[in-house]
Every structure is written in structure tokens, then in C-alpha cells.
Length: 289
Image (cartoon, rainbow, N blue to C red; front, side):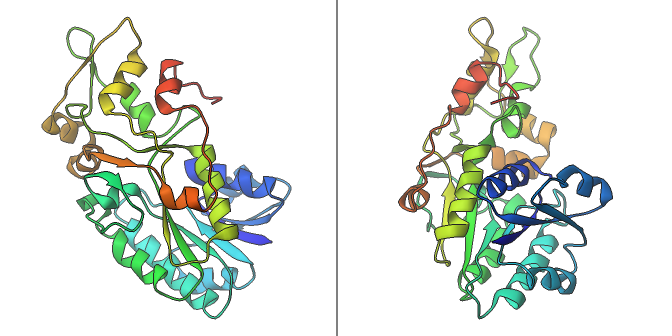
């Protein structure tokens, strides 16, 4: 199969690209410029420089492939417009076909929730308030479309956990946590998340959302303690400090208290077994793992 992939140079997208190639797919990777094209130009990948904000152009690309995965993000105020353009193009191109499409959502849209079920109502914080409408449009479209909602993604020294470990210290040298540290984060290793994307691409019937969470839901305090090791300490922060550090919208999401077992993904056959985030932080959060 030839699969169109957006975001192939990103944290999640690059892992998905590797898994698609390992599954012997051909990949058409949509990138923003020639520099990004050079970064993904390997055997099995055809870089395509184009504009994801242009639904007509993207539809032309989608018409030529057997399926698609969307992991790209604008990472700014354009995220909503980017997703709307991609959804519009997918619905126009894939309508009336059995071509699979896997869209990226996020676990934050569930809001505070101690046991997230994949079909729970959405209660998003401000930073992701734009997500549910587009996802619902996809899932009820009749297109073979699925949504993967990743938890806190970790692995290879990247993602939000790296920001936690590199956080500020107080006058005594203690790591300042994000908020009190009592909130739980549902977690997932980036490589196993990539496995889930490919599994959903192959097997999901469409119309379903899958939480990408491995069932390990540490508190931020546990993560901070693992990051500093036995010879250092952590100290509670506050919502105000977090807002000053990350901005109010991002901080609101990081302060959510969430847990998930990823039950729908497991029912599809996903079996995550990577080292936990706590384990990797205790080992210095190495780039190779």
C-alpha cells in the first residue's frame, strides 16, 4: 500500500514513518519545504512539498494513495485551521471508498477523568477546545476514518517529559513540579504509539477513537522524583507558576488529572510493553530509548 503521511519529520510522525516502512508500505510524505524533504528522503519514501492548508491540493494527493495518516500540527493558533483543511480533503477524496484514514487527536480533550473510556464525552481545556467538532465530523462521516488520541508521549529523550525534567529549581536546588504534582498523566512510548497508528490503519473499521495510553499513569510527582534521582528533591509548584512558565492554556492541560488503560486499542490487538516513563527517567531519559 502507498500511504500518505503528514508530519513525517515530527516527534510522532517520524516514529510512524519508521513503522510504515518496516511494514513494507510505500510512503508519500507531505512536507513544507525542500529542507524537510531531504530529511525524509530514504528508500520507500516519496517527499511531496505542499500546503496542508490547501484542501484542493491535498485532495489531489490523497486521490493517488491507498490510505493516509495525519500527524502534522501547526503548534500554534493555526492548528484548528490545519485540521479542518485536512479533514475536508480526506472526506472529499475518500468518500465512497474503503481507504483508511487515521487522524491524530489528544487525550486532553477528555478533561479531568480518573478512568478514561475511549468513547467518554469530551470536556476539553481551552487549548484543544477546537478538536471535538472535527473529530466527530470524521467519525460519523461514513469514511473509514479513525482517531488516535495519544497520552503524554515519551521516549528517545523527547516530548513533554523532557520539559518536566529540565524544569526550574528553587533556592535549595529542588526541582519545581508542574502544579502540586498530584495529577496523573496517561503515558505512551512514541514507538509503541506508532505501532498503534499502523495497527489502526490496517484493522480499524472506522468510526472509532482509540486512546493511545499504555495503562501506566504516574503522578507528576513520581515523574519528578524519578528525574532527579535519590540524591535530589522535588517541590510542589502552583497553577500560577505553571501558567507563568508555559502560558495559561498549556498549563491548564498539563494540570489535568487523567488516567487511562487504552482499552479500545488493546481490544484491537495493541500490546504495549516498552519501559515505563518512570523507568526511563530514572535512567537519565536516554536518547536511544
